[in-house]
Image (cartoon, rainbow, N blue to C red; front, side, top):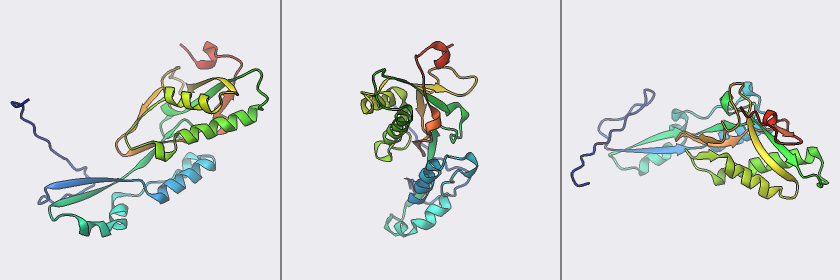
Length: 208
């Protein structure tokens, strides 16, 4: 490794200007409270795609946190990066290939109603995507979500699977999703996105 020559270059996007005299570029990724609150309210109200909240711009963040500029070194350049939610599962998802239904096979002896099961499944999914559990740019694995939901509803459901809604997709296509460095996951799934089925047949799961 002593003979390896390495050079790293940092390029700003076309929307951001950088003072060429700066030598230390500090990227600060910010998920604002206002954008977080508006997004969660939007999901709670049905996640209408036409009313989707918009994250703040770099300029908004620079003005909001301008007081921090006085603590940086003269050679530092602080770049404020707005973080946006990567919307999963429900009709509110911007990417149609990430829209999916959750299909449940309930235990035959459970006294819990279908409506209550669906409600508890959505709550478990939302709890799994609690912001305290995630960081920017992580990867979602459905196996981890399935294990968590099974743990929360161990006496109620026997099977929990995810089935993509894209016509060109098939079973397994949404088992793994990676977020960009400026994204963090959140579920837009509603009770209508949970379906209780009698068995995991190939037609129910869209296995091709």
